[in-house]
Image (tube, rainbow, N blue to C red):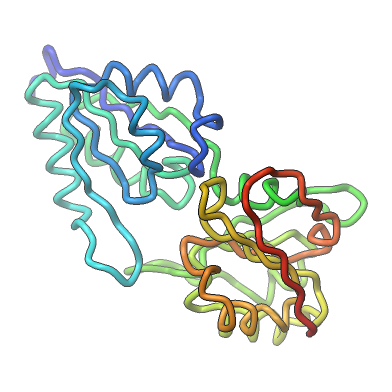
Length: 258
């Protein structure tokens, strides 16, 4: 395929929601775009900053709900790029953190289409920070692991036992539906029941809610409070004890015994 007059496709991270956390690079691509293929989790306030003449195509994907087929997204990006349009693939958070950006980049490059990646702030960092939790702190953890609680088709399952022994802060994406099983696996791996834990839902949006408790108490928190539904981030580790309400967003604070 000839790529003459084909613009690079931009895989752009929209961040967790708050437009204030959008990068300057992301803003420039949005303002120059002819076509924007947007995820469901991209905040409408971010889209409001885009070129008003751009065509916005919703290709949302959400676990447990009707979603746009990934192959169709690839074909749509390729078709629009080959038409000469400046294409932005807008993704919540960061394109390369549980965003399938790698798959999309491969599909485009296979057709000879150049790809640029504009990173965004991933919810796994923004959600804990919004309630004052540093995911790394030398006083209580040697690092952080970003893992998924939903493996999807042909995905690998995290080694929960190894993670339980690692001493790392665990930041779990897409873990609400499988919270009980994840907690059981971590407990089987040796993690103590009263390990501090938190859940942050709809981080950095007006709907943000959170609760703080213990590892053993996480399933009860989620079951008793429907406002903590997906999209949500689970945070497990000693750093949760450092939480402080540093945001002016409407938050909900709860505690649960192990």
